[in-house]
Length: 419
Ligand code: FES
Ligand SMILES: [Fe+2]
Image (cartoon, rainbow, N blue to C red; front, side, top):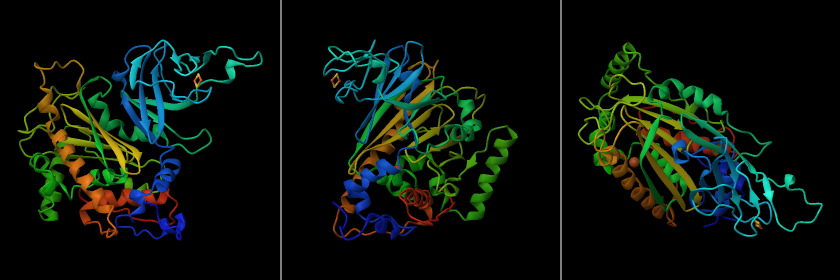
């Protein structure tokens, strides 16, 4: 559905009201999706995969996002590089299989051959004045942090988020978990028939947890803490924080997304207790894997690191769940969840995959359903923007940030509250 041709894009953005969901075209119009992919996405560091996905020389994995395809490959020297999956001859995709091991990157169309550093090393029957050195694959920026590979689709001369600033802010919370020294025990893709912003809006609020997630609500005490009076709640949190600080645990509270409304890639983090008597995010609260990394004791907390709108790291003491959101089309996106435990843990002896993945798997299946139903309602002629509740502050901040990035002037919504 296209937006009303009488309204310019700038007018449409300018008339959105902070504190409310967006007008229909933002969730349905391919032209707006295209604009987002051109103006909002580039410059952000996008999580691709864990480094253990491509452990050997010549291993590669593709990351497809909104029509782009990026090859992330480990070279002969062990370095990870990224290239646009676009042949410099006539533009064919070079790699077709989503993952593999290769000696060279060879285009299936006319067999131009690139080495793993992207250099063109063979092109048959070209004229004498053709210099292969002029035709390397297009580079894509890539960085690795704590075993996680990120790419950036920003242009060479365009603005790019400061990767070092973001990862430095997370360092004290993430480091003890040693996410590089982990193994993937499960990865699940949840295809979602909805605009990517509906999926992100959903993920950033827990107003829906009680009605939509019975399992998650049983595990996470904070969901119903909102029913307690603010003073009792503040006291509970203070007691936990005091205990954590006395043990040298970083009592993380980096909820500064609201202060970063004009950042290319806002980030934030928080840490909270799970529930009295629970050690981790499992069905019965009992540990489901060995303590991660350098952790020496259980602190019964969970940490969330928010790396822009499209990547989230949930840390329990014994496992991590990585959430990657990928816009595909205006009406389709994909959520991939990857579960990690320490790399020397053995299935059967130290962990049972079903128990580790239970909460996030059941919760994400439920989320996919409510997000799809949300899109169906938004498609109606009768849909109009609705008010966010006090408890949807994370969603409000996301939308305020989004409108800023889309060019709206003076949007403020730096609301901080309880999750
Ligand atoms: S398009 Fe790749 S070799 Fe022709
Ligand atoms: Fe949810």
